[in-house]
Length: 422
Image (cartoon, rainbow, N blue to C red; front, top):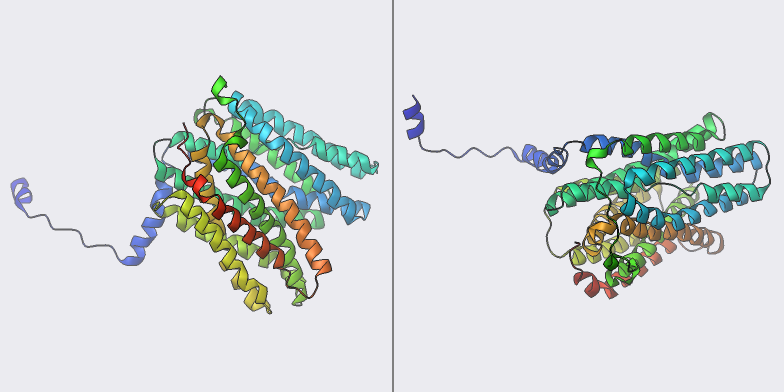
């Protein structure tokens, strides 16, 4: 029988039906990603700690606005917290690279929790406004768990560019999922329970998720004490400056898009649908990110990045003419599909530009630029809506996207000459 089987000609297997083959090809890279021991554990723990990041702004604004009856004060306190976080982020990233993730993330989460607790107590007991600003500045120790998870993937798959590409894609999808779920959860808690419920829940989740994440020690990258050659400022890297400026303008797109969408939906007669319509943009980004992560890498990363930024700018142009909710919703979904591939490729470029020993600092620096851009974009978008009423509310995001494209195009050669990280 064995001789008979050995003598039979090899018959090629019949290919699977197209639908099933596509399904396997989409999921296979992600299954392979989680075959490394400990990857699922640190991913789930990080998700618990990352979700509150998108709850903080809404939770703080609703709590102060409800109790103090002042959206101006609420917005100013929230902006102070964003500014403090933007300053502290790169410093925390530098400490993480030098001393390790657990030794820095846990104290940072404790500091944030204490600041958030003080904020709730000050609001509840009628403390003066300056106390709220001090609490907002004091609660800036938000550990960048997203950057830390990306650093873990980079360390686990240091010699596998395809796996790192899939990991960055997955992380971007997680970011978008947090963006969709976090603000909605905070709004429900603040309105259905009590005004401080959103911020209290966010602080509890952030502390719990950080503790669980820090406990996953076997996947934690080893710290990298600095040598003399590593002390130069990261911003002296030409390619990183291009990325930072592009992410600043891209953040302005994201920040102004929220304001523009709320204004557009209200002008079309259904303000209650704002949250659902905004979520469509994130849903489009999630879908594109999952598909993009399963595709093989083709062409230089710099070219893919510039192409993605330009596609994002082009995808926003149809929004300028949207005059119905049934038109606006699908256009937002399509516009979101350019977001994830652009962000994923941008983080791949960060990996190439930054030495492995400073990866957390590099990623938090880039995300700080994104955060500052979001704040500036939200302010500019609000001014546009208030003062340029006849114009489309999407004028600001379209302008910011055009600026991002111009910066990326001008810096394309510097991005192409980036060297692999060491």
